[in-house]
Amino acid sequence: MKTTRRGFVKTTGGAAAGAAFLFDIVPARVLGLQGQTPPSDTVHFGHIGIGGRGRGFLRPESNLGKQVAPSPNLGGDGTRFLRPARSVALCDVDVKRLDEAATRVGGQPKLYKDFRRLLEDKDVDAVYIASPDHWHALMTILACQAGKDVYVEKPACNTIEEGRAMVTAAERYGRVVQVGSQGRSQLSAWHAANYIRNGQIGTVRKVTCWHYASPDGDWTPDAEPPQGLDYEMWVGPARWLPYNSKHTHGAFRWLIDFGGGQIRDRGAHVMSIAQWIMDSDATGPVSVEATGDPPRDGMYDSAVTMTVTYEFKNPDWTLVWAQPGVPSAELEARYGAVYWGDNGRLTVTYGDGQPTNTEQKAKDYQAPCDGVKVFRSPGHGENLEDCIRSREKPIMHIEAAHRVATLCILGNLSFQMRRKLEWDPVAERVKNDDEANRMLSRPGRGPWHL
Image 1 (cartoon, helix red, strand yellow):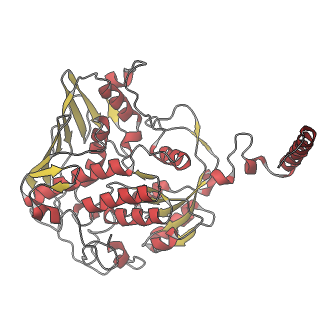
Image 2 (cartoon, rainbow, N blue to C red):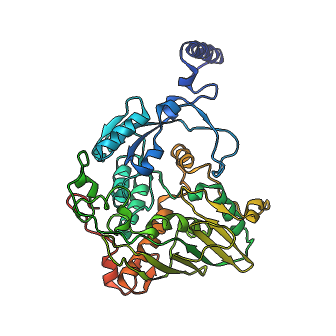
Image 3 (spheres, rainbow, N blue to C red):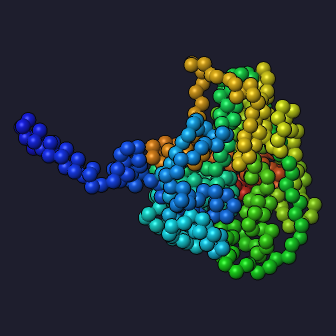
């Protein structure tokens, strides 16, 4: 098509006039003017699992557009605004929790008892998955297939096969997946990474983690599930066990099939920071050896005390998970890790909902202009929402989370089998050990399988 200069000016002038008229009758909010966000930029979240951690992800309608002060432990500086996001759909197998969450959110969120129906909802852009651990993998994979971006709680998976399938699904369907090891988005973790990666304690040869022991448990009689809880759906892909209050809400972590003990709970936080600081997100150890004590009595089967030693190659370093271990002499905390370098050491504590902390020397350090640049997250949820818009990988992307979950899984596997495992981090197989390799996956139950 051709046009003259006079025709072009006439046409564009009319368009400008039309736009001016449009501005008069359409609110600035709709057009994204005056610093406001148009509705098309608002992320609509669905929430799967809304007890415990899941409650913290809800976006009450009353908070929309409010200015908030940043947490001093997150990456943001100064005053920030909440990213424009809404909770439009909620799902839980416990009706009581579902009703409580709906009241908290306000407005009229859609309510589901089957997460598959929520994933079919075209109004949902992304999902928060805060179900028990044994559901994380399947829910994430199905969410990716449904075209949803995902925030899934840690640990990413219960088996090696599940974790690799999650990575494949995110890549195949072009989805952003952030895993909830939020320590990487806390300011002190960034200070520690900035300090260590810029060589301030020399080459790190060893990282020693400490944590208190897992509970022994007791004997609580099985019972009928409470009214309003779909226990069949709660168990899902895991091995069937009769309902017991000490197996479900808040207590599932001490069973290998559902949780996996302290190493798969807090270990997924503490060792996530270690993998990040050591720049090992794309690899894994070459050997794993665990020792410790099982429960003396009771209904749980995860290790009470356990020490796991991981050996890495190229570069060579050792990671030790110890419950209980030797706490740091520099900072008082119930759990954390000490990084041992040729020229000193540095402590980093916690890494989860507890405020992560590190030593003042790392907080005071400023890297030179030509030094290593470490990404500074604005906050874990904020980083997710930024990446949903930019399509970049988040700070705890699924490949990194799968590698951290692998550490937890192999630690438990070595403990159960009472032997050292020689691990191939590329093939993701145990060398010369068919029995161990058979335990890198699980068959699933009923329709719930990969």
